[in-house]
Image (spheres, rainbow, N blue to C red):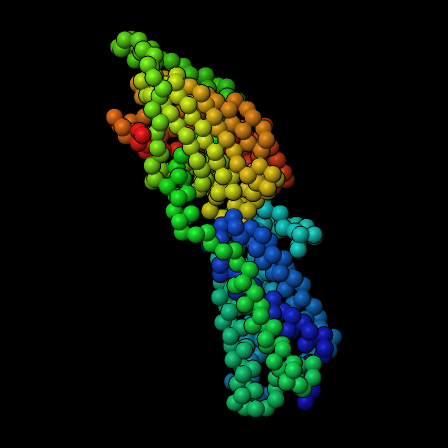
Length: 418
């Protein structure tokens, strides 16, 4: 029986193993967040490799034509359709994945196996949803065709016993018959084995409770927006004068301010413009120590430490980019810290706390504005801030050219007095 060329056999099984790995990994990537960034990069690298090997496989078909079809009729037509569909899948899936990365709001650089840079395709960002849908559709079609192809091979070998499978083996030997399919199964198993281990549920629950406060302090605001700050200051001063006219002058606290425990269920968000669109995200892990007497805010003592690796904008590609030196540089600077000694009352229930933000080894004066509601031992806090990212070296690379210079922060949470 005429066999395929050795080049075709090698390419067939190499692509099969890589496809098995891609299918195994691909479905889990969206649930990994930033933990899956390195795996996303590997997924992209293997996708481009499959694209190149497929082009080589097509060239090999013309260089040395394949053996004649083994069947005619509807069975032969079906086999031919599955083969054609597989080629379409092996070309379309990598190309739509490439387009997906190229149309993302934040252009995440792709280095093939960490070495060769892959340029982005010149596609408009409004095609992102189409490329995402197309990539997912190709994945489902590919799985179906993959299974049909395997089912057809098993039919010929186990039911028809016509020896057709030997055409795609280097030699008629049980060794190859066992080894090559085993390598394909190994690709599936390897894809599952290298997935990052999810964090323990206890640890995952704790950040959810701490989530709110961390974000609040995470992005304290600078004083760089002079006109906006002047308008806000004028309004705050007017409100403060009105409040002071109606109330006697506050007395200084007799003792230290009470400490407050931040409660679960709050929210902190950040947003930044990017070429006319908005990217929004939050932080998931933080610790905070807060002491403040609302009637005597000058005695406030605030310290917040933020785990920068917990930043997420809801997209694993971009989450992974946040960890790199271009943004937070988590490897060298895993946390940020905001410290404020004292606050000032700017209105009936409004305050401003000026302190210092330390991020990526840089410390700069920052301020946040917030309001308090409620009374007694339970208060609700809501506020906002603005931070200029450039002085901290956040967003300093080529993929950040479309980002606005200022990042907006809004936060809300509840706290109980100890």
